[in-house]
Image 1 (cartoon, protein in one colour):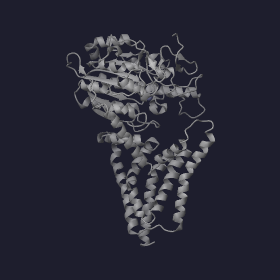
Image 2 (cartoon, rainbow, N blue to C red):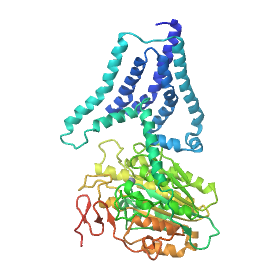
Image 3 (cartoon, protein in one colour):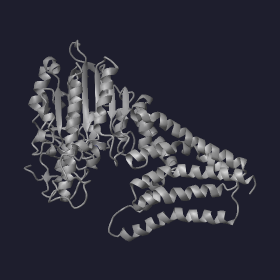
Length: 576
Ligand SMILES: [Zn+2]
């Protein structure tokens, strides 16, 4: 070692400070979650990797500090995020943050913006000071225990993977998990830790984002040649499509449920429940394109598709279009939806919480809706995408909406599993009711000729005494039977009484989400050469089409066999 002892001591102090700062997000995470996997992801792996980095660059510790400087800058932000949402950021969160405009960031952080900015620069300063002082003190790390420690770090890093494979082999006899599962879990653990996990997160974000945008570009050249029908109105027109999430009709008071889950919508006038509406597929990835495009339910969900969505038709007809989402921009299940979102003139991503955390409630959609209405005097078509009732249900509503207890988050021992799930689920419906009523209230007071179409992407299976399955993607009746409704302003009724009358007469018929596209077209008074009103609930020409569900199996929902345990829908049986 060379350099004066004082300089070495100060360099050493800065390095310790830097390491502590880099570990801070991990410690905050551990404070909220002390499960074994978090110990590995938040402590074992990051600590071993940091030690290994300094050991490998033993002769140039200043270089290690410089390499870590960008992460030191980010550490306060990541720690702040984990403090709020109790888990690390992800590629999806990065996408949301990057797609956020500075004005939204200002609204989001509020008074915390200035202190947070100071913290970021303080973090960077610590790293730079550590680099400069260790260079000035000519700090070196030599000797045998550097090699020993490197080996120990490698062992510590590989140990969790070994344990993962050992326990996988132990249980794989009974479970049919893929052989790469332990490796995937290990990759996730590295990705969740700080600082090194930031690198795969950014790589993932970039590649998924680019792929999504390339998919979106495929529709660029497509034209419906859509125009407005009828004479222009003197009043502005505003139309809204709200896409719900995992909402099942059976738990809506509006459709006959025995709990008061729709206290607000039930009181509103001009609401038309569409009572026998079904989704074509029990998963968003296939269900949402059926809502947004002219896809038909007899097509395979992954069949090639070259047409743009309803957003394009609306924009051709002179509507300024918005996509405001409380879901996420990228991801295996999100990107195929987002590629349609990017047909809109304005795209906003609001969710900072991810699927697996509380916070970022659907009420966050209301202010951006108001902002969109206030931003111009133009006619608008706006899509609002809710988080709705996606698992975990208790993460979807604020405390004030915890009407039914015990919930899934209540201490163990209270109520049965079935009761707890039902209560949690119903609280999420109660909150969706509130959000939808708030959205309608904004439209009602906008002074525009206005209408709103709501439907859930698909329903949800919750456990019953005969069925212990839950979630969606199974293919049961409650996953297909979705709530849908139409709301219209008094001015809309005055200007378009025939559309309202047609909708009212069709609302009780056997309808399907593939009816949405043409209904929206008629809702907004648009037409194009191949516009097919037999699929439009706002047209007297609407007629029943075979309600194919689960396209790979081609099941006619109206003649399907339905099993008694879970209500699983399968081919053949019912009164053919
Ligand atoms: Zn969904």
